[in-house]
Image (cartoon, rainbow, N blue to C red; front, side, top):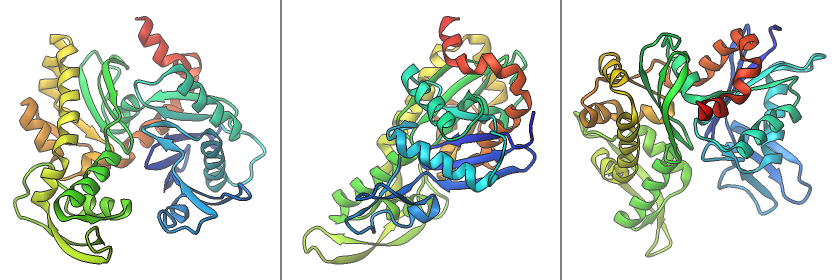
Length: 340
């Protein structure tokens, strides 16, 4: 087991790389800037993200992962390669890599992740399902016969799962997560204020004043955009209570998914969950009041895990210690569950 083995949380919005013996060595946006004429990669990660929406005609800034899966295979492979190079430098020996995948994924999508990891320079690629990694990273002992519910809200997918005895008992993965919140803000501002704002402004609003449950004190933010009536720049103020309205549709879908998983779960495990509570992980869970909203809708105590953004990466890192057990198992984790 070499100390250079790495775990990758391959997210739609950002990529976290955990290096065995070092911890989280990299956390960067999953964005690649490419020169269209030559096909050459100009920048990856944070450098590429700063180019989003600001590039000249021949340069495009793309996000090669959409809704938790690879949408541009070639770019994903190059991006993983660049990030591995960043954290490991030049190495004679190829590392083993564990990559996180959504809990509901097709075999074709799974194969694409394994191939991308292999092409990027891995000796062997193992897969771990996101909710399992999130639970391990949140400090839950998943090996016991005790039901725990994880709600992992990432950039592209929300994974909701009930875990017991080290495996997933019931789960769902919906393509409604952080990105959909950004889209909801853009739509809302367009409809309500007749102003067009960019993706990055929407994300800033989500992080600054975004909330899904009333705040004790109203927060406001000054927003710049282009007026759709005049075509000229316009500055206006948006309040946090408007955000609840903007997010309504998106949050309803996530709450509905939580309900559907609870409905399919065995009564004994639901009893465990009522005792243990629901744990939320992922960047999306940091939107103000998400835990309060789920608690009010389910009646089950809900908390956001410490360092929610890094839970999946830490869980993947801890899984590196058990890579020998995983050799055959994790490769076929999804299919093994389907056969049960």
